[in-house]
Length: 359
Image 1 (cartoon, helix red, strand yellow):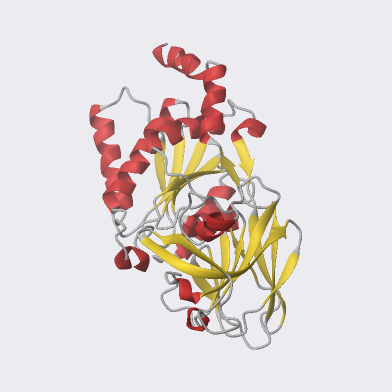
Image 2 (cartoon, rainbow, N blue to C red):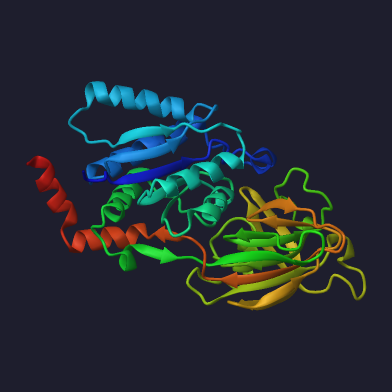
C-alpha cells in the first residue's frame, strides 16, 4: 500500500493579536482570514498531488471555519482536488504547548513538510521540534522578519512540488541560521533556548506582557540576520549594517539607556531610527556593533533584566545564572517558494500536472 503524500499545517490562532497590535496602528489578523489562507493553501497542495493534510483543532474558530469550507467543497466543487484533512485529536491548552505537541506528532507521522501560518514566535515554536522536516513559512503574525508575506495559493503549489519530491531538495530548500542561548553556570545550568531572528537583553526585570515594544527596554541585541527593509528588532541592525539570511555572520549590538542620553560621558553613540513594531518607529542610541561569527559564543550580561527571543521576553535569569549566545547553521529548513516555482517552470512540471489531471 502506497503511503499518501502528507503535509502538516500549523495555523496559530493567536498570531497577530499581541499587545503591539493594540498600541500601534497595525491591523489585527482575523480568524476568518487565517481560515481562508488554510483553504487557499489546500487548493494549491491538492492541485499538485498532496493527498493528506494533518492540522490542529482550536477553540477560536479557525478549525471550525476550515471544516465548513471542506464540507462546502465536497458538495459543490468535486472537480477540484483537495487533500483529505485530518484534525489531530490532541488536548487543547490554548498555549504554545499546542504547537509543540502538534509538531512533534506531525514529525512522528513523517509529514513531507509543515506549512506554518504565524509570526516569528510561531515559527520559533515550530522550529524547536521540527528537526529536518522542512517548513513552508507564511506570515500572519505581528513581527514577521522570518516568514514571508505571500499568497497561500502560490505557496501551496510550491509546497506540493516539494512534498511530492518533484524538485531536488538542494534546489527547493534553504538551511537557516539560528541563535542559541545556553545557561552554562548557575541554578538553570543546561537550559537552552533558540531564536530564529533575534535575542534581546531587555532592561525590564520581569517578563510581563512579553512583547518588546519600547526601545528604552533594549540593552543589547544578537541578530541572526538584519534586513534593511524588515520590521521588528532586526530592523535596528538593518538600519546600520544589513546582514543577509545567507551571510556567514550575524550582529551583536549594544545601546545606551534613554535616561543617560545627553549626560556628559554617557549615552554617547550613533543615533538610529527603526520600525521596531508595525506603526512604531523608535529612536535608539547605538553604543557598539560587532559581527557575530558562526560558532562564536559570547557571554551575556543579563543580571538585572530579562531575555527575549524573537521579540518576546521569556527568561528571567536567576541569581548566579550565566548565559552564552552562539550563532549556528542548525536552524530549520525552509521552502524557497520562488526558486521552487522557477524550477517547476523550467522543467514543465505544471504542464505535466495539468496533462495528468485532464487524463
